[in-house]
Length: 95
Image (cartoon, rainbow, N blue to C red; front, top):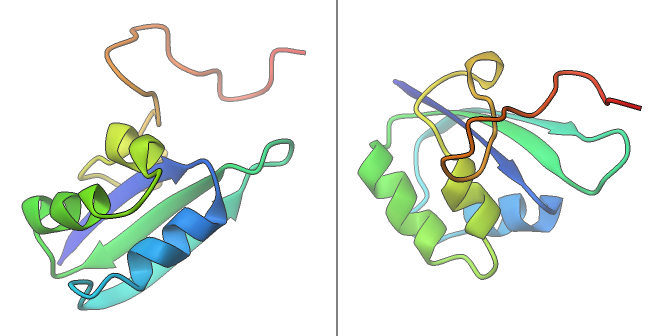
């Protein structure tokens, strides 16, 4: 089993990924909504490899946030930060 986590800027992108023809062997899918924005945080337990999952993400329209934040770790260990920005997102809103 492999565990992956990522952020998506809309829940529809997660559903589109799950409906992808190559998606298989999903044993657990956890989706946590953001309290303010339409973003969702996702944890996925699957038999798929990271390469297989990234290939599916590449086929989903507007899945750039998923592609940028997909990591082979549980949700708690993923900073969900896009790119190489070393300034991590705060755990709590700053306001």
